[in-house]
Length: 88
Picture 1 (cartoon, rainbow, N blue to C red):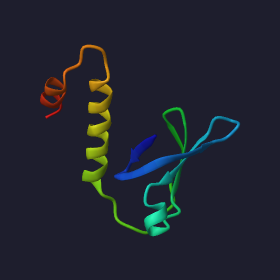
Picture 2: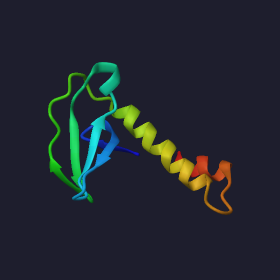
Picture 3: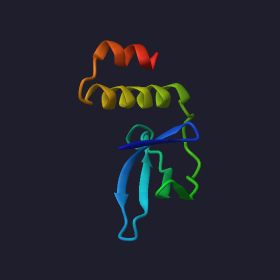
Picture 4: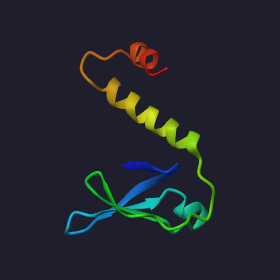
C-alpha cells in the first residue's frame, strides 16, 4: 500500500493496536529519510518530519495512475484498450 501526501510518497509500515497507520517515506532505504506519516482513516494525526530529499510530484501521480489502471483492468469485463483510453 502507498499513499501520496504533499508530493511525497509513503509506504505502509505498520498499524498500531489503536488503528493508527504508520507510513514510512518511500525513500527510506535510498536516502535514509526518516519522515513518517501517521493516519487514522482519512485523517492525518501527525504531520511528517522534514524530508532529506526533494518531492517528486510526477512520480507519485504516475504511481497513482498505474494503480487505478490495474484496479480497472482486473474488474470483470474490462478491456485493456478501454482502460488506457479512459486514463489518458
